[in-house]
Image (cartoon, rainbow, N blue to C red; front, side, top):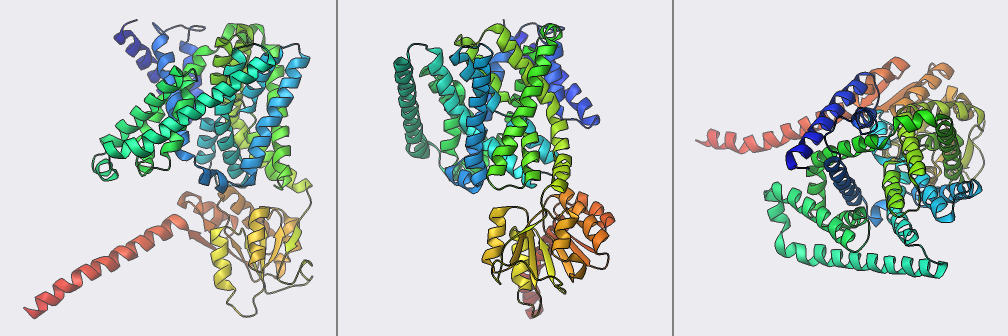
Length: 560
């Protein structure tokens, strides 16, 4: 294969991905579906229109490494602590339980232990690239289930590294003792790689490139990122690891450096290119003939994965005190097999842990669940509403008057729905008003505890439900302030308040200008448009600064 043949492969695949991705966008679907379909149609098992597949596969592997590098740039121990117990504990428990249960099922179906462990690890992972993009497009990253899902995805991405180490050790075979020695050797080499990268990035890099020079020349951070990611991937491969391990560790160690912010911004176009090629290359692995022959088995496996993973993830999130409605929504969002499962499957196949038939089944399952993901993400909020109607109303957390519930018949009070930073600022200002009781309704237990710390009467409940609003005597409230960032939730709360208490004043926050009209139509008396307010505030600052700059010139002219 020559260079121009490989370039032609990439050109054909990118063109097909662009056309089919745009078509999916017109049909209000995720463009990822178009990328997958492009690879499937042009791949060797369908139309076979690519002269050679080697170049695409090689560049796709580089794309995976770059994707892990960018994920590493977003990761730090500080970030991991910030996402809270649902990500740390819930993510770890979800990966562990899903792997164990899948392994047990595979053993019952006759698979060997190494193969069963490998399949369990594959099923435990979900699609970060697909879910984050879909949640962002639906403005649901700030929703409770969106935050839960992103936190668990972060933990899953981190889990890819130890999973790859375990799969590599299993591929070596041998007894339990030999396997333990292989794992210990692998961990030791990984530690050596981490130490080497740390020394290079912390001491070697500042001698070559200073932060000031990197800021002046926009090309240097891009070259730095590509060199570090590719070099770390090569070093990891040379030591016998997967290249994505080195790329991820390099990104993670670089995340604390002064170059991280600029690299994250400048590398996005490269990441888009490689991720598109990666999803298209996944589609190339699909075997339509195999799917046609084995569709009953595939349908059963897909159903088991989606239902089982959704139920298990929902149960895990619920254990960490998330409301049942949001737990179910989180489980549904994460009920697919992720792109890194394919990487694990490739390593397992190369290590003879799984055969070709099982590999085809895993690829087909991944493809089908990725096709279902946009519909699952859209379905999650609706299921949350259905489950919310069946769950218990609200329960009091605590308050300034102790742990007793609010007295029945309270009136003239202010109800704050959502106690994030915006809700806290509202409470701080309004607590200075005399004779104004404040009641907080919050869905997240951890955030509700912050309201309790303010000494406010706080209720843990879903304000989209009429029973919760009645519990806080919404009909006698003087006003309701909604500070939740999720536009869909805010609209539902406005509609409920208007239905129960048409005379109560409703002031609501709109995170994005495009959603303001929905809140107006729902019945809000006043909508604080964040994007509009930011623009007004910036204009005021500009006017003030310009006035300060012009004032001395006018004074000088007057003196002359």
